[in-house]
Image (cartoon, rainbow, N blue to C red; front, top):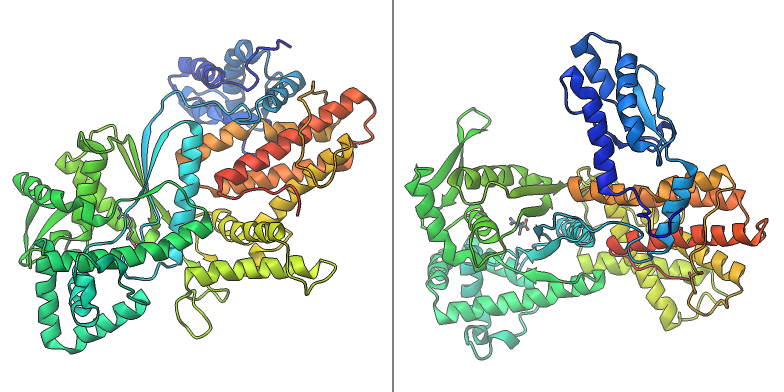
Length: 602
Ligand code: ARG
């Protein structure tokens, strides 16, 4: 084995294999015989199912087609794969050679930062629009999901080598501000003064919002004033702006607390108000192209294929009858700023992480933007929808009294339960926990909330359960954190390191496979780049959790079958220690991408 040889199968090698399969299939007139990662480990490491599709077209049996493809593959995969196996009607299974597995995992051990995950060749500028709460309103569990999923996807894309811009599309503009500004005028006059507005204590913003709304609904004079308030604000009236800014500042303090608790970094606030200067331009350009038309006094875009339930065309409103703009208008302006304008982000890809309820909104906005030529053709706009968080009873997630759950309370509760669990297992369960243990407890509690969310297929609804997310059994954060700490313990013991010190990971050693359990663990470990590129393309973070869970299970089987401490020889011991190191590194890396810090002792 050459020292400087590329340890992982490089993209180039993978492409070569795929090309060879395609070429082998070409005589049949089809060019898409693809080689893909195997869907099940017992199918091998890679598979090619192209023969089945080809057979009909060429009047040949699928097995004969498969044989033909294998002939094309053989010279390319020689050093890496075993002789391809044709299974069933014509599935081609490809299996790594033992030497290749040894070499690959050895390469991973030598590269603890990236574990041989290549940096992408085609670096892209990617905007991830996530979190995006609304000013003066409660940040709810939907925003929590958006924050957690958006952060993880950003981390994965960044790790792949892309240039990621995390944007918080805060709802800081709209007609509700008229009523809020007027309410402040009466109740908190200092908020209307630019000098003092930032420091006014507005109290609980939700209470404030409710009070303003109540007046708006009951008091006609107030309603009129509120409408005028919006106009003033839009016209840049100094008092209205000061009041608006005081609301934004107070909200910002609130959601920053959540970001701090979740350890969310690098999220740039780019609220809806930022796009105000571009809204008229959006309407003008839509009108010029006759895409925007008058509709019941308002301005709307009609798109093919979008209808109401009764079959009538469904308008996408871009300007209200009173001249105000809509949610969609801002999103159209944002698309231009993110992709088209020279002084904007010039993104190649824009992701929008919101609840699935907004799917139609984004479909229509994307379609309108494309039709209007608001973005270069190569840019990809992608909605990343997610389902609802439900209570354990499957109903709306709420407190016992039926109120919405405050995110702060939710996170605090997870940490509290994690703390109680830790305390109950200590010598004196009544004693206060030492500071370092408190930190660990926070990691476990917050990590459990994050992991529970990320481990679900994001498109399905899930039932929020402290018990399940904090369980030590199953695909949970505590399980993974314990798995990591356990490997740390194994390495400490096998190398005679002190308990209290941070683990010194052993030098990478030559890998020698002596047992089937080692083979299975390594086959899993070398899949890491494929898993990450899958997430990069399909944007399903649960793939990371599934893989973590699989990896830790493979590790358990390995550890059951193969003694590390009492290995047959020093070489085998060193090899097994390297497997521990790479497994721990994989867990640490992926947990990091999920926004969860591992700890060496629990
Ligand atoms: N503020 C919106 C909400 O709370 C989410 C905004 C999502 N991003 C966007 N560009 N529309 O639902």
